[in-house]
Length: 195
Image 1 (cartoon, rainbow, N blue to C red):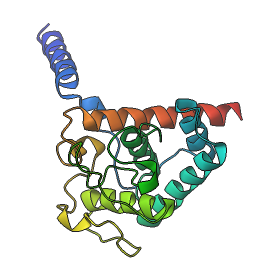
Image 2: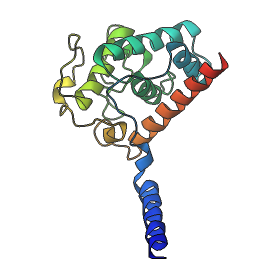
Image 3: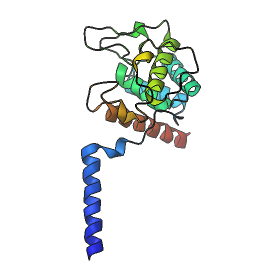
């Protein structure tokens, strides 16, 4: 009888911790490889924003995959974060599409436009490098194009949920990125089963 009571108490406590602290979202690491295919990332983006040209969706998905692999960053996480930061490339916030700023670099409030980059690849590269700065003390493989790289405490966020309070002040930020990462992975997994 005592064993049953202890087990029940432990289960209730575990459930309380997951609900209260969101332990279930501590699963996505920033470093490592993603599982979504570039074609699935592109179609997922178009599903969320049907105004996006298929060539643009394919190009940005492929660049995210390539740049993330070069730096050993989980491309699922990076792509999901880009989707959140840009509203699935619909923008509408402070930074505009012409800036190629896919992650809100340098945007501190509605009065600051943030950083600008020469082209799509450099904008994605800066995003990946900024993620790597948080996730690892190892410097980027490619030349640093992220102008804010030097300000990050290296290796201070190995998991997505740890970006809350560092990348953004939104108390739900890490959970949002983590949830969208899981949604993207599931979308890609279902596409693989269908095809």
